[in-house]
Image 1 (cartoon, rainbow, N blue to C red):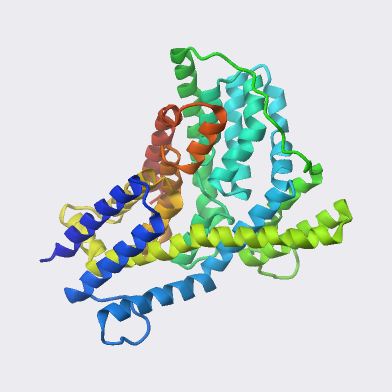
Image 2 (cartoon, one colour):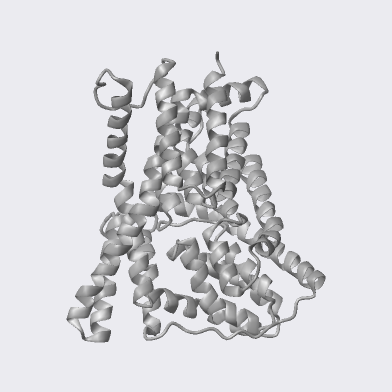
Length: 457
């Protein structure tokens, strides 16, 4: 009976994966699976994650736990993520995101005679932009409107250009990332030190590997497929050409967080700004910019609705996913999934490194199946503190590679929104992009496993 909970958990994971592949609504799938697992755990005398006093009836206790999950998440990480979503939506509305892209891409002009190098040069630039515009699908479409025509006119093939653009979303890092927000909440650490000391060093190495891989893979496939360069004319977003100074707005929260984090001693006084505070302050700076540009107070006041709508969109798409994924994860925990996995790992000689590799690969495959790095991380991330404690290691030592592998898996998922959207704009098959992304993504996954668990762990 020791592994009964583990067997039941694996069955539920398989059922959930199958339903998600069939395009069932993920929030409902994860919620129903979580409730059912919690109910089964209660029936076989496993402990339930109820913080308040038990009502004495398992079914009511489970729904009390769901209520607690909504309250706790909305008050903490949920508010942060909704603020990030609203800020990103507002930056897109006023043209600041597009201004950032235009400014960031100016260095590419020196590579006009070397199209293949120009293509891979987009990767580090794209990564910097992605840190400030962390929506994968939104980022992809933004670059399709700005970077794609430039690359095509430089002689880069359509498929190579789209693969590069989608490849830029392989590493979901930075204070504005919802996966980062979830990771630091789970590990109970500060956002900026995690970004500076944990994410950036390994992201630099992985970006170099990604650039080399894409250069070789696209060169091989372009030659094999005998693709011809096609000049593409795209329509600029009409009526909202923002001045270049607006490029500062999307990166303002990052500047504030770094300046007042304590990592850099820039100011004589010690101040600490949270991510939500930085986003709200930057939002009102953006509104001030709009007032100075448009001289229309009524329109600027009305534009605040874009921020609120963005918060609402993130709540129904991301925050609710975090909540139900946490319920799903706690269903697994209550059934003894992690205890069984740890027991098996220890019996076959695996330590913290072995379990870390298993969890990193598991979340990579989950993101591939779900088409969402967020959903994969939210489902399995909450399991890690207990695992890390049993092996006597820091939670971040396992959460960091999971953080990165979640977004890697999304980059080769044929049902990922960013791949579907960019393929549709470029007029190329989604599976053709997946084929070009496979080797670069697996290369960085292998590099991540070797570097993190073999050298740094």
